[in-house]
Amino acid sequence: MTEALRVVQPGLFTTIQDIGRPQAIAAGVPPGGAMDRFAHSAANMLVGNERGAATLECTLSGPYLVAERDCLIAITGADLDPHVNGASVPGWTGVLLAAGDELTFGRRRTGARAYVAVGGGVAGDRWLGSMSTNLMCGRGGMDGRALISGDVISVHDSTVPLIAGRTMSEHLRPRYEERTLHAIAGPHFTRLQPESRQALFEATYAVSHDSNRMGYRLEGARLDAPGDELLSFGLVAGVVQLPSGGQPILLMADHQTAGGYPIVATVASASMPIAAQLAPGDELRFTETSIEVALALRADQRAALESLTN
Image (cartoon, rainbow, N blue to C red; front, side, top):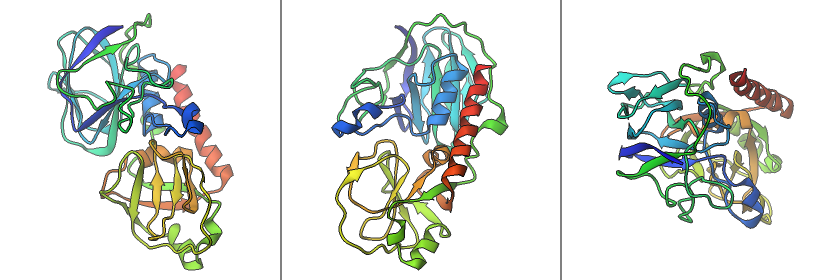
């Protein structure tokens, strides 16, 4: 491993994330990992890494980093106005840093989470097969916590040439500004009263300030789903749960592995990058989608990532 970046200021909430711990769900461990898997994967591929390598996930504001040596980076996801030595640099593009270069971020323009990939892949503490930071357990990443001033970020040694300029075409990137999530009716959708079924796919919801990487509490039309209490069952990211209060919860990367609230919808995987870029106060809508359409959308995203290997 080689020291690559020094943290001068950590930003609001910057953590090391990879694709998480899906193999540990059966043991009750949240899967975790990058909230926006598409942006995370694209950033890695733009610098020649495997798509599952660890990156820095920057939330709402970016860090101030200084390069300890020459390195290749790519910044994807939210537009947090990145600069190198005071000059604006493009997102979704490989950028070469020389030793001593300063990477800073300005004002948030769009989205909530940006991803910084470094050639070789960010190195961190590995726990249960993943370097993703789990704050609840204090494991993974940088000692199980968010970055702080003075941290030094190391990367794995790599023989891949440092070639800047590779970019992902704008038309292949998620359209984060749309904020409409494709969703499939869930296993308990029929428990909803008729007016609630209509509201689920027509009403506008806002992400509550009481939201985090585990899930978004949504404020908007109250949904009514009477019926007997359910036994706990397995959960996945994208599930829309309905607690007794009638305000839905959209589960995200650090979600619990089991629960007993009715599931009224499940967001298509292709819409989860858009969900990951929502900040408290942002509005969203669900649009009902068939499984066939959801699979087609996922195939389009897979093809967009594969275009980076050509």
